[in-house]
Image (tube, rainbow, N blue to C red; front, side, top):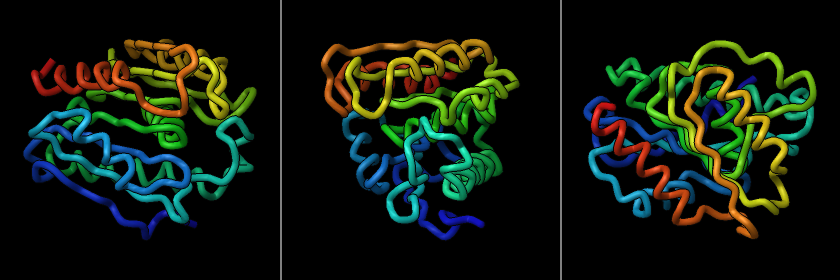
Length: 212
């Protein structure tokens, strides 16, 4: 069952196959247009921007801290969508080292979970206010190597949806799998993406553009 399987994929920027790719994953209650509002803020040309859409504007029904089974079938379908996008991008000749996966809120959780389940050398992973999905022993099963992939985790210290313990757990998982993780916690920040986080994401994009 694929609840998200017939949803659209929005594309902008350079033609697919001619440039590095930024995969943008929107949050709960949002749509591709919302996450693509980041493109002017990132201010980086010569990229292909791809943003998949969730059915009903939500990737999975409950909190990302719930047991995974409680978020099915949405969660598995959402992960399938990201896998299909990445596979299709690579089939166009773009290596994973030129793909950056970025998400906000529920999209950051989905991006983190997808990357942790499918570690490889990506251009980068950027999670604005999010972390891996599940609870308890479910967080112990990740395996593989990121081979130095740069990862940025940014979050408020008082976010109502994302506890700092899960950001810390996500950092530990990515580090164990060989990512180079930058974590920044912002005192009193609202549920938003601040300019410092944008600057950190720009650094990752610039390194990919430069072929680092």
